[in-house]
Image (cartoon, rainbow, N blue to C red; front, top):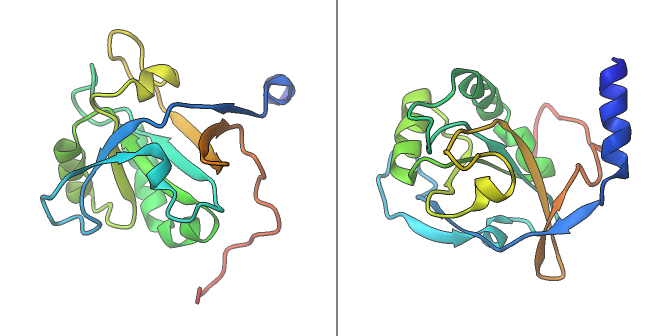
Length: 171
């Protein structure tokens, strides 16, 4: 508990936000069972609702990691189950260094039909954000972004949960 408190204190001393490059990423159709078309998409275009933060779960898959991380997969299984809750509060996607075709194949096998899948292959996204090293080794984590005056900014949980609570049914 003391270590968590120390880490939290250090994080509070960091700059609240940092402008990042508008990376070119890749995604496929909303329907997971379709194999295409795949398209290039800018990071800024992933804000389906620009008033909400964009949260990425950083899946350890791609680069030097030839198979998806089993622990990451466990977490994503859970995110898939609460995808409708997540969409009420934020834009959410899973991002991997693996190519979009490989990522979607794994997503189909695991039944991740309630989540947006994005590939960072061919970009420096994961390397720049320190979720991949120069040898392609992957690290897990969560990244939070907001769109502000046309710029994408990397945040450390900008507003928390606020007064939002999950509901039994959404409109």
